[in-house]
Length: 537
Image (cartoon, rainbow, N blue to C red; front, side, top):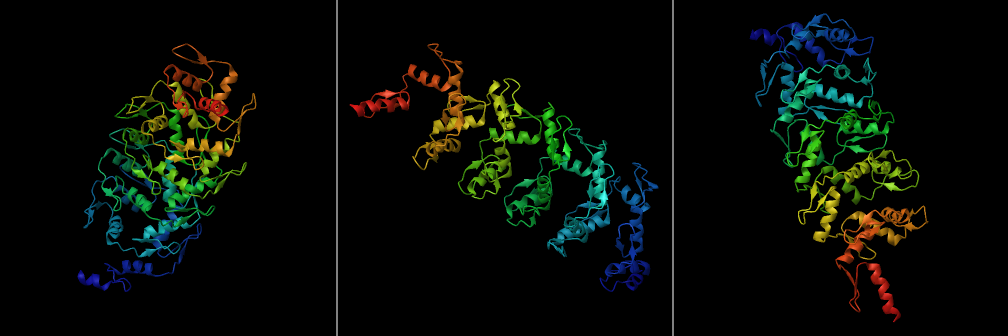
């Protein structure tokens, strides 16, 4: 037997074969001659059997059926290969990591991972791979040819396997059910990834920051964040990305067509996952609950995001100003403040912005349309986020409590602004007059005073104001309606701020004192008016 093996050896790679026929078939791999051509797609093949198998792909006849699940195949070889799936026997084991496989070729592909040798390099981007099949799959990314089309929606794909995987979307059959939460899935890969959610084991750790992941594919994606290399570029705007998947997702922005539509409100989306997230808005089902406060959420990610409120740790720190954030996305948005690059411009007023989303949000200022209306008081807003914040005004629930004085707030931002009063933290200083503020938004409003920008005008009397809040307070004086009543003397006022100053008089809170005679006043303008008396005398 050993003698027979030695007689049939490949002269190129020295691989041994049992018979001369197998050796001849193998030898064609080392040859660049492809004498078998497909007339339909003009593809060429070295071996006759590869050509025959390819021709069967064009045929709709599937005469071989699986005895277990009834699935049909074109060739007997495909049936045999498929039936191994129904068996739990994995006879091929890896000597390095002891992982087992059903197919021998899968084991061979797996073993190349441990070798570390990546001898198959892409001619276009020089990216290297351990095995040839991975290189072939990668090269399809550089090709714009999509010759395989879905019969239902007409979407085109680069490979037959991607068409088959896509076709399951059009089917309502979900054959994979999770034993823990009973969630159903169409794809076995998605099902396997989902099962890891119920496990606390995170075996894939990053070598740089020690962050651990449940999914193997999540680790390489995370490791790209530590690298400054961005080898993928958008052909339209030239923006660079670390991963090819990021480019594909980004390219949808340049496409005006939004193919995913909501059946309830007809809102359109570019991404399917965006539609799926949107559909949860129409559903009242909130199956995820916070263990601390009991608040319910539609998604698990919302619970995780919410839990950071109860945890005071802010682990995402800005490298420039050391400001800390609970969410990584907030840090990314904040870091854009330190950048002077503003590549997005408003077509109406010419104002420049750092992000495309900021331009879109700004454009609504030029539009009088306020399509987001409150169901309770009919107040309308341009932005949906403002409406959500407004709804909390009508709610009696105040979930944010000050740890210093016990005061409760509906909004987290209101609590953070309140804390500045306790700690006296006023890190935002005006460069002109030196006045300090607790947050950046108040500083920006103050800067309008120095710039003499009074772009908010009263429609009744024509008086101009530096910010919208002052205009709103002023408009209450024209209404004549006195909604704000004093609890001590029953006096009524049009404006809430006037009531606050009135209440200070009852408690003799006089913060503004005259340096000449010591007389104190409730408001600063009263002191300035009084100082004129000293000047005249």
